[in-house]
Image (cartoon, rainbow, N blue to C red; front, side, top):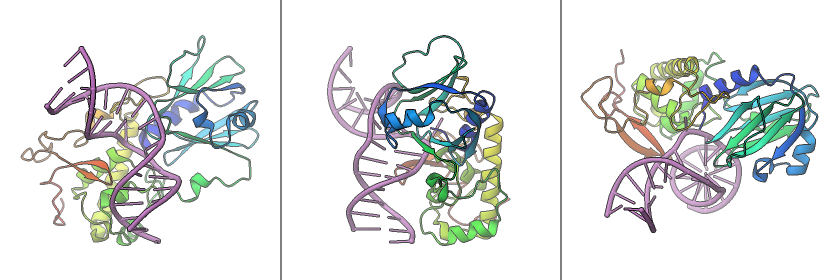
Length: 281
DNA sequence: CTTAACGCCTGAAGGC
DNA sequence: TGCCTTCAGGCGTTAA
């Protein structure tokens, strides 16, 4: 479910809660979540550890412990963290993991589809999840020339390229559609055909939309929740995503179309996002 | 090397 | 109402 702004929102929420918490007990309610290590090893690795902080890397969460150990989490489609401060942890069927802390609070991991993944790494161990991660459009200043060179090597549609975490990390289906709409670029355009001007504009729009979404605590299309169970506010600001058949908010003349690209829905305005490299502005 | 398709899971929504 | 199909913000693996 979560893309960069949603993960950033979750991380910011967790930063006010998790540092200093010591794991008294780790409940594994669904073994698949701990499959990489095995339930027993997973519990042994994490029990007794004290959190020092949490950061975002692309769409990954990187928890750090005072021991120097790392916990790397990907929420995939439906994973979510819920801060639990009072009373017993509920018996909800989607709860897969419960970190019970020494101060009697808890961190709940809920995941309807159980696609999320957890990895624990020792202090000097390399973290494979981060090895091939592309550049972060929010925290890094990315030269348009570099992005252009990445595009030029690929024949896939530019929309599909935006979803490739090895180029830019953190963008998912929603923000890919929204950024292309803002940049007035046809999502079907082969990445290799992009111009320097378009590359620069697209980067700018990606940055802008991700930062705007962060300011709104992310987008809640289906069931995204912050760690306090609050919804994000950005869905009101979506221009094309999920708006098939509605009038384009820019030209008002054309209806938003939905097509399939790499088995994912792409929403766009065929008029504003014309195939011809438009003389933008 | 690249690209395209499948599979992982559950539940909600839409068509008939 | 009920059944069946499709869809979902992701991505690793496999096949070509």
